[in-house]
Every structure is written in C-alpha cells, then in structure tokens.
Image (cartoon, rainbow, N blue to C red):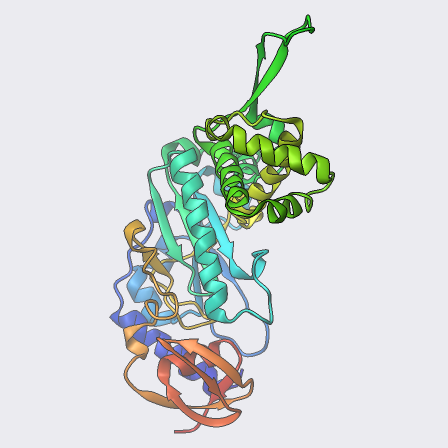
Length: 392
C-alpha cells in the first residue's frame, strides 16, 4: 500500500471517528484492548496489552490514533494491561462466536460474489441464534456484523462467563453437531412381543421436542412429504440413492411411510427396519444442513480479542455494527454498514485489481487504471488492496 493511500485512509478513518459515538462493552476497564495502526508494507503490527486507562477516553483515542482495526478482549481481568496472560489475573470471559464466510462449507471461494457469501453467512447466523436462544436459552446476547465477511455473537449471561475452555468446546461441539450419533436422539421402550415371540420388542422413538431431535425429525418429515408427493417410480429411485437401499428396501420403506404417516409425525420412526436405516442417514444430512459452522478457536479462547462494535474494519472501510435481533433479517451488509462519512462524493483511485464491486446498493465492474468512484467504494477497494489512491 502506497504512502498516499495510507495517509488518505488514516485521515478519513480519523474523520469518521471524530463524528462517531461509540459505546464500549460492559466492564470496559476490566478488558484488554488492542489495535492495529496504519503502517507501510504487507504486514500488520498489533499493539495490545493495553487497558482503557492506558488508551484514555475512547472517542478521543480513536480520533487521535485513527487505527486500522480496534479490538477488546472477551476476558475480564484484574490487571488487563499486564504484559503476559498469566499476570493479568483472569476473572471471567464472554462466550463469543465468530462466523466467517470464508470458512463456510456452502461458500465456493472464487465463484460466490461478496454479496452471496454474506447472504450465506447470515443464514448460518440465524441457525446459530436458533441454538443459542432455543437450545441454551441465553438471554444477554449482542449480535455484530464484523465489517468484513461475517458476524460475531457475544453472550454475556452470568452462567457462561466462568466456563473454562473444555466446557466452551462442548458448546462448540453441540452447535456444530460434532460427534452426535443418531441413537443418542432415540429412546427405546419395551413393548409386548408379537405372536410366536416370547421376548418383548423394542419400540424406538425419536425425541421431537427441541434440540437436535426436533431438527432431525423435521428433516425426516420434509423428506417423507417430498416422497409422498412423487409418483411411485420417482420415489423408489430417490430412496435407492441412499447407501444400502435396494429396490426391496425402498419399496418397504415407501409403503411404511404411506401407511404410518401419523406415527412418523409423532416421532415413531421404527415403522420398518428399512425406514429406520434411511432415518439414520437423514439425521446426518440434518446435522450437515442445520449446524452452525462457527470458528471453534474463537469460542474456546477465553482471552480472545474481538472487534469493537462501532469501529471501522481496516480491510473494508465498513462499520463493525451492532444489530438488534429484530433487524437481522432486513439487515443489508452491503448497504447498512457504509459510514455516512464516506457517502455523497467521489474520489479518484488507481485500480490494480479490476472486477466486480458490490457496495452501497450498487454492483458494477471497475476497470483497471485511474477511475472516479463513490468514496465508500474507493475506500473499500483501497482497504482490500485492489486500488491505490489516485491524484485528485
């Protein structure tokens, strides 16, 4: 990044911070703070092990330092400015979740546009919130658009702040569905044996009230409804796509679904051995489709630094923005986080990486060389290394 570009971005970030009103996190003086300044060269240098007392009044600090990135710790400490983690005196930590579009299995890097990646990431966010609200009943949560390619969720319920890494990893495993076997969701009950059998049989019922049992059951019933809407040949062909299901088992499973629909809707998936076999496969599909693909190290790390809501992301120029729960569905990450400071006028940039640019409600192709573009687009291109600042 050239000095002219650095100087421009540094100055405009400062202009934004002098206009912004940023609310610090709870217990801000008990947290470690860090920031990355605008420096020449390809690398970035983190300045950390600072307390809020070291930084001074937050708005004044941001306007004066004009940082590229700003972070605070999930952890709360006796001495947040101590130079080693062992000397800080850990008290507790927020439970933080990070969703990054780059790491989502549904995202195809190099093919999905920035907007498509963010849309898929929002879907993953809503699945995560479903776990946190319905399965764990967390109440004190803050949802944040990262300003880049994803979302953060900060959980500050008192019940989770003291959890160690191992306990946090169990939460990670649950929302990701790691190690979750179908049989764990099935209850068995002895029933009277059939004629000619002296020992009782086992009735296997899927737990359908909440959690992964409800998700798996919903996935199974969706597939059952789809099969029953097909003509018989198409349904049999679909069933035979499952491993180990030949024509005979497919026919038996389809007949069982037709004649035992109410039982299946109630969770009794043991209507035929072939159907039970298919239900097990559908469970694995449900886990693959419904899990929340969070970044595990962020959640398990009790000392993690996370972006400050209200600050600017130095890799995009977009605001790290808090989101009200009711506003998430309508939130447009390509429009809403564009700072007002960068709207309303154009600048000249020298584009070195041409191609698609999606931002501020517009989608267009920028050509290589000197271009006049809306400032928020120019800042986005420069922050991402796709352009240098041109001479006005």
